[in-house]
Length: 363
Image (cartoon, rainbow, N blue to C red; front, side, top):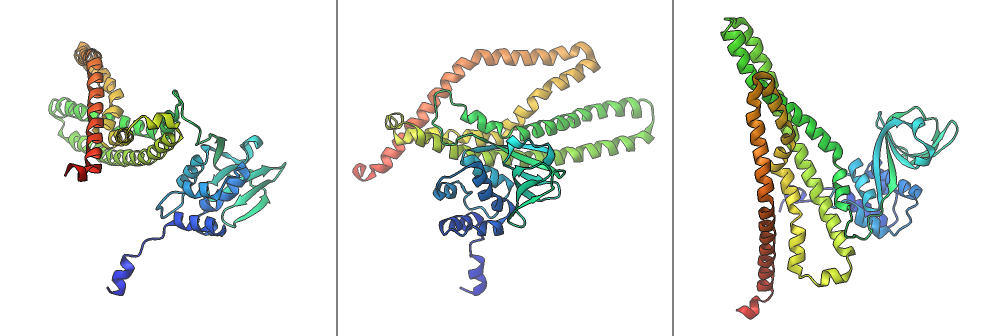
C-alpha cells in the first residue's frame, strides 16, 4: 500500500471523539479548540447547576460528528435535560431571572451570560475562553434561554414526549408552509397566464405584450424550481433529525419502562414496535409530506375558481366533501386492517427471529 493510499483511508477528524477523550483525561482546554460552541458547553452546564458524571456528558455528545455547532450544543443540552428557546433581542432586554443563557451576537461572537450588574455583564467569552466583565448590554443577537426539562423522566400512559419532540420543529414547519404557499401561487399563475394570452394577446391582437408575459412566467417557474429544491432539502433535514431524535428518545423510553412491561413482550415484538417509528421518517422523505403541506391550499384554488367562474367552484367543493364522507365511512374498516397488518408483521418478525435462533435444531 502506498503512502497516498494509506492517507486516503485515514479516518477524518471526529470532534465528538476528541471531546470525549478530553473528558476522560480531564483535558478541558480541548473544548475551546474544537469550536466556540464546544467552548461554551462546560461553562454553561456549570452555571445551570449540572453536577452529574462525565459519563453522561460523553453519552450525550453527538457520535461520529466532524463539527460541533449550535445545533449540536442545543441537542447535547436537551439530552442532559435542558431545553432551549431562541429569543432575538439585546442583552439589556434579557431579564436577570433568565440568566444564565447562551447569546450569539449578530457579529458572530458567542457568550455565556452569567450575571448582570447595573452597567456591566459578567459573561464567558468563547473566543478568548475567559470569563470577563464588560458593557455588552447593547449588543444585539439571539439569546437561547434554558429551562429544566428532565430528559430521563419516566414515561406514563399520557406522556406527551413525542408531541414535545415534534414541537421543536415548528419553526421549520412554518417555513415549509410559507414556501408551499408560494409554490401554489406559482402553480395558480400558469392557467391565469394561459387565460391572459388568449384574452390580451390573441383576442386583442397585441403580440408585443407576449414577451413580457413569457419573461414573467419564466421567472416564476425558475423561482418555483428553486423553492421546490429548498423544500425537499428542508424535508430531508427534518426527516434525518427526527430519525435520530426519535430513535434516541424511544430507546430511552423503552429503557425507563418497568420490567413488567418489557418482559411480557418478545424481543421481536419490541423490535417491531421500534421499527414502526421509521414511518415518521418515511413520511417526511416521501410524497405524503408534500401532499400534507399542499392540502390546506386546495381551498385557495377553489376560491380563485369561484371568483372567475362563480358556481362552477361548487363542483370541486362537492368532490372534497365526497372524499371526506368516504374517508369517514372507510376509516373504521381501514383502522382494523392496519391493526391486522401490524400484527401480521409482528408475527412474521417473531417467526424469522425464532427461525434464525433455532436454525441448528431445524437443520
